[in-house]
Image: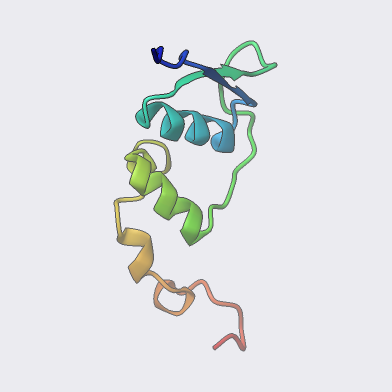
Length: 92
C-alpha cells in the first residue's frame, strides 16, 4: 500500500530580490517555502539597483515587475539607449 508523500518545506536563505523571487515562484508551484533573512525588517537602504532585461522579464512572469520597479510589462523592450538619449558619445 502506498502512502502519500510527506510535504517538504523548502528553505530559502536571504530575502533579497533573488530569494523572494525564488520563494514566490516555488510557492506558486505548490511548495511550502520558508524564507530566512537576517535583517529585522525589510526597507530601502539607500542603494539603487539596475536590472537587466532578463531579470525584468522574470519579474513580469511572476507578476511583480510593476509593483516594485514601476516598469509596465513590455515597456522596457521598446527603449534603447539611442531612443532615450542616454547613450555615451560614440556609442552606436
